[in-house]
Image (cartoon, rainbow, N blue to C red; front, side, top):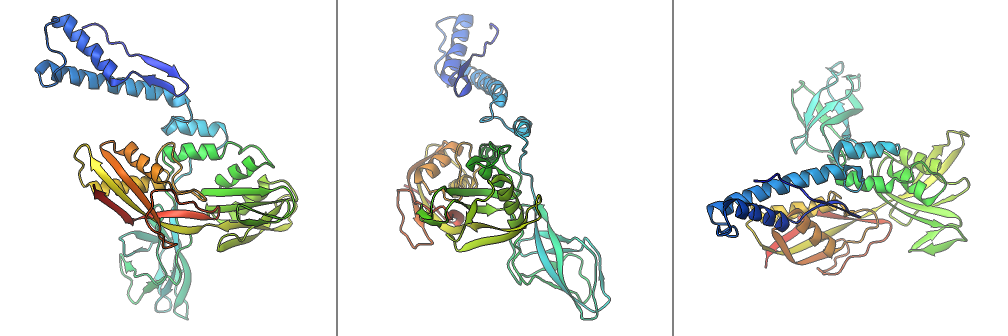
Length: 407
């Protein structure tokens, strides 16, 4: 056979390979030239048909791999270390994994010593390790011993959870009097990092809407936000009562201190803050590094709206455990793990079209005939039109609220 030639087309979308049908036709033509024109090269069930399909698949894989490599200079397609390099050019980096923290109370006989690294297990089997050693005082109680989860990610434990000591200490009991407010995060995926780059393009700017959004988005643990500004007299804008010459942010994730620092560093001097649209307004007294002045920085935390999803599907090809497959596809979309789709972020409407598209992108063999969504928090009914949210709300989809049916 002649040497294989891989054709790549340059377009506004980047480097694009030929369609599989074109590559297959080239292989079929090569077989016809080599073995004669009377050979059947179109039937996939013949020996030569099987060989042609195998060769076509191999060439498609090579072409896709080469195109993917060539596209790594494009920030909208880059991944891995290539995307990390692009992020570093703008003074940013992929958000790394962090670990959940919980405050534990020890109750034991006075003078009992519990060393750092002491391990306890929650009801889901996660191991937590103490950060410091502790000696039980005369009162028999030590409060607020910090424990860190062994695995990264958002691990939530509720107040008065049941704990099991991995290596029990005689007479010791452990409890947590409150929920753990400090939960961890997973390292950003390529899709999440690409969206993060778009949200932080103004990171090196200042005193503009873009720079404020970029600065707050870059704060550790911030997953999404909404932004609004009022450059005139006091007014109600998008349902939010805004002070004159003020900005409004509703931020999901991150610590109040980091968010306050980012807002103060990036906004223009003298601009006021508006909050109170959500049920969880935050006022954080922040010490400005330049002047030492304490300023009350105000923003909102989003109200969570529980969403139900009903996906009616057909299977073009067999899918193992189709219910779990579709549920996982929807949860991946919600987490913003699908390139080109933002997922469920602060103020983002819930679109049945986007959710069904996300399923098809991940699993082409699944055809969604109908996708319905439901605002569970508002006791709404299933509908095929999008659910609009306010700038102070964020949608949430849990696996238990996803129904998958064949129809």
